[in-house]
Amino acid sequence: MDLRYNELFLVLSSELKTLQYYFGKNPKYSQLLEVFVEYREDEYNDMPKQSELINRFGISRTQLMELMHDLCQDFKHSIFQAHRYKIERTEYYVSAETRDDHHWQVGLDYLEHIPKKGDVFSIPFIKTEYDSGYFKVKEVHHSVVNCVHTISIFVSSKSDDDESSRFNR
Image (tube, rainbow, N blue to C red; front, side, top):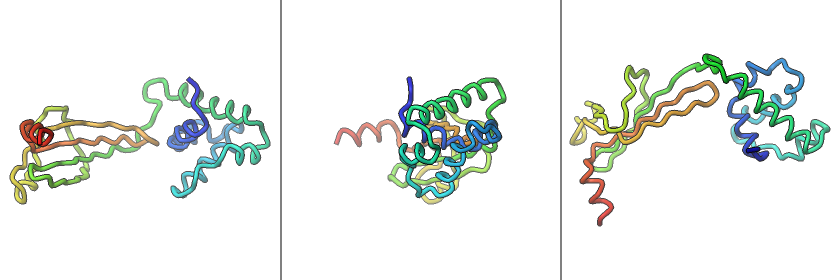
């Protein structure tokens, strides 16, 4: 399935570090990578319109889309083998919900074991202020973007009965 311009632009610009690593010296992609750098430097920039890039590069719409699709395909092929996509760091976050609907967001420096759904997760310092320091893991999300692996763990001290009664009101 071919991605449309907006989707393709966002996918490619989100992997700028990896694209620069593999294709930074490739003259075929140098102008396009410059656009991604400009876009990423200021997160408030609007995505450039296709017509802007067509005029800037002096190419047709078809050529622009072929260039972007080529870069996407080359990116996919370059990271296909094991150990080809470099993870520079891993970030860990816990989002905890207490029985009385208080929410805690905790950024962790390190986590030896990644819990799975249903595991019990203990955060004792929350117990001092609220009723429980024990939480059940509801979800674990992983994302890999621009060489950063983010692990988000969603936990709740509410029992399944608390959850169902909330919906049956």
